[in-house]
Amino acid sequence: MILLARHGETEWNVERRMQGRKDSPLTGRGQRQAHAMAALVRSLAQRDPGPWRVITSPLGRAHATAGIIAAAAGLSLEADDRLMEVSCGDWEGRLWAEVGAGVPATAASRRWIFNAVGGESYEEVEDRVANFLASVEPEPHRRLVVVSHGVSGRILRGVYAGLTQEAVTELDVPQDAVYRLQNGQIDRFDCEPVE
Image (cartoon, rainbow, N blue to C red; front, side, top):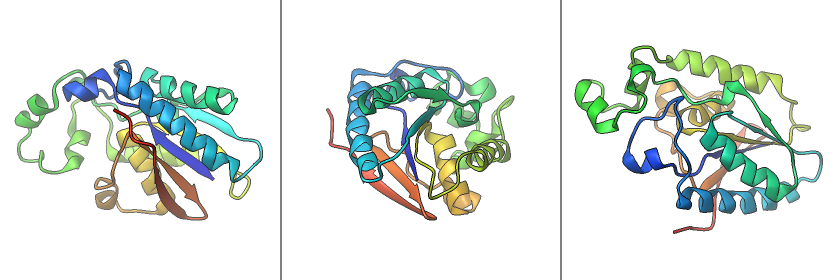
């Protein structure tokens, strides 16, 4: 089983600024979201006792969220570069609206994020998250809490479920839910709402 979470809200999420590999701290709301995810993870993990691991993207926003989750569950924290967010190259740090205005022909599709100069392609992100999934314990022995990002977490779910690129780009990327990946199924669990 994998319990997959996205990092909590960041200052750049609020500003609608592209993060990619650059970082921005969690907001107060983002920290409350991380605590809500921690409570939910603890509850879900208790249903399947055994040795659990928490693995996170090394980027600060994911690492901070995962640290809150790991502390609440009494687990250590591991970082894995393969869980990092898509590199958005030259667009990182720029406002979404500004970037979207520069690429109007593709802005209607969520796939335009893969067109950044100096950024990663969908296939590059897919390869690294698929490599991550192939490297972890097989089911039913797998008990992982994974904290990632919007795009890389969406693609991880797609690789797990065998979804097309089009289907993957339409998946939700909430910051207040945890996905359980188990036995070829993906189930969403919403956290207690936070203000």
